[in-house]
Image (cartoon, rainbow over all chains, first blue to last red; front, top):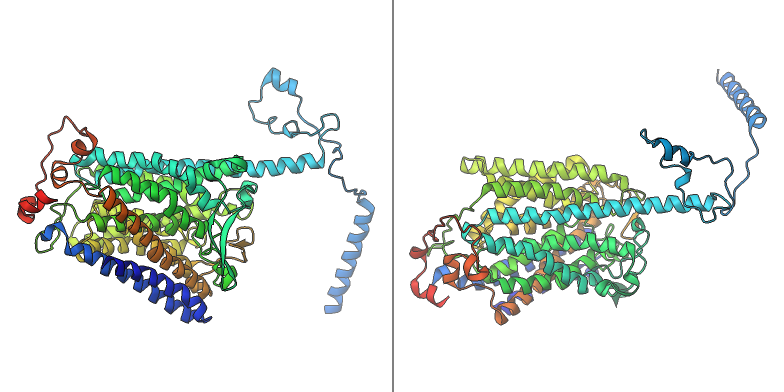
Length: 60
Length: 552
């Protein structure tokens, strides 16, 4: 799960920056950047944190 | 009527012109090396005999440095003295601001130590104490060069010209500055007075970022792992983002290269300092896991109160004081290039801190029935963190709004990490610095009012930084790209490196040490040897099985 989480994090950044090349419209760039941030946050708080929560000491 | 007025005007102009020609003396331009006649200076013998109690004689023509004493003071001497004075004012301003920021370490140490249990006080204080030395060393070796090695010219500091090389790659026809290459060990040409001033100021900023991590991971972080992690943050992670934002790197050039406002704008470091520190704190805290006793078997959290609220609130005051170095000092000067805006920046800083503490206090009072002291303190810090990036670009009303939102946001964020994400953060550092650091970055893209003018351009783009509410949506996009980079790249770098540390050194102390308190097992001495300390009594036996503790 950890590699997937890390991939998600970097992919989110790549989406946000890629938006600069995909469109020159400010609204489009804003939406794509927000999407990228969302993907990265899912990678960190969703996947990576989920991985560690499954192994948390209070669950043992 | 109109003809009458016109006639009067013509007459007045004619009379004025006659007067000018009659009274004006011939004006001759002086060459730079020509002595200026008629300059009178106080008699130094008079000062020697009588002193100058009224401060009327010091600071005169006597004090202008002359290149040729026989010739006297020339126009060139005066110009050089004026330039020297400007740079001197800016050096002194930047150094004093840096000293204030350095003192913030004491504030952080008090806040963090006050919010943890007494049995870990020595360990937490020593983490805060040593981030200074460890971070400084790493930053001197390579961090500063990576961050600022290509940042010249810095006009307010006289240029800092030796910092003149940025490593960049060309992608899609645009240069992407990645890191600086001048200033390793502050050697060679970077043995330069302007570079030294810049180093000191930037170093204490970096140290602020490293000390954020210690708070979120207190009471369970192995001291050796902390030391290695801090060195990495000071040597690489922080400097990289610092370069991209402040050192002429690719984020700062989003305006010039993609037409996104003035590129990523972060006046004093909501992103560069606080979000980097907060996100690194999150990456480590996730790997460390919560303290023993923080969560019950069903996942419900337990409150683990700190041991000294006096420490906490005194530390908050020290931090608020130091922030006057943090934000106004980020002009890197008080003279020239719009630096007189330092007054506005200082007031914005005060206001956001105040509204942050006020809104956090109100939130807790309404939601839980009591005005919570530690959250009021965190609200103050959240407001200060949030205003750090926009402080140089917004008006006072925006500062109040930014601070007010930050105070609410820190409460919501603490609840989210405590109850939903279940990331244990004993001091709320992730919420104060991470969440509100990102909010500060975003707020530049919303509230920048287009009235600041630091020498006519910012990040190489002419004009003033202007946010969405004042007509430039492109600035908001630049700020969002900055946030995406913080979350997508900086968090990832911190996560990966600290994962390596976990594998090689091990990040977390053993359960027995944690239950006993880290002062003896990790540091070899109690912080309060004469006090009767309680053993950990927060449902430890009830929520963790004995085999789990033994194995941990």
